Image (cartoon, rainbow, N blue to C red; front, side, top):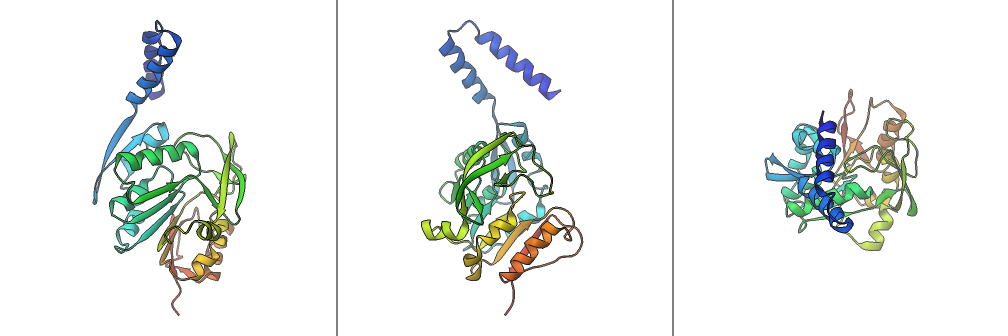
Length: 272
């Protein structure tokens, strides 16, 4: 139904603008498309946010903002006031914005260009650019030019993989576009650019979490990172999930629970 209505609206716009010359017609249609993009308000414990909804995918987030991953929001709520939060795989910024609204110094990383555009619009319209920096890049276990393999380039989409053709469920990605992307080893990124070092890291890239952690070995060895929040798909016994758990165990971090089925695991420094 919604697609049919959208086609009717688009058709009406094309019909009304048809008498204009080519330049004005194109400009009119582009401007009308901008006017049609909604900014949906979302109520949070830290105040109201507006979400820039420029695709079907982004329009799905506002209604479930507070219920999609309540454990992640609770984790952010418990962060101390001096937190430096890194959101790796930020998408359109659901948790980036929440952390920013909670006044945490935040760095967000999102390699998909269309999604990154929406992330930046969200930060702009919510006045969060004074405490949130967002970068369009991928993290990996090495620094290299590579490709972000994507099933589509729609803003807000997910299940992409940098230099890999399968996602977190170990299924092949039906690659529609291989997006040229700059990939960084986290330790190299830090040595080159001296960013604010994280005390809390959220890691959710739907594919290469283990490789990203391997590229942060020096950072994690310092013990500054107080908590690492990693999305895991399916039962914890899966080889992929065990690889994440074992990699962090070798770096001195242990999951705060490993019972049953879960969406996210928090890893804390081992007590000495």
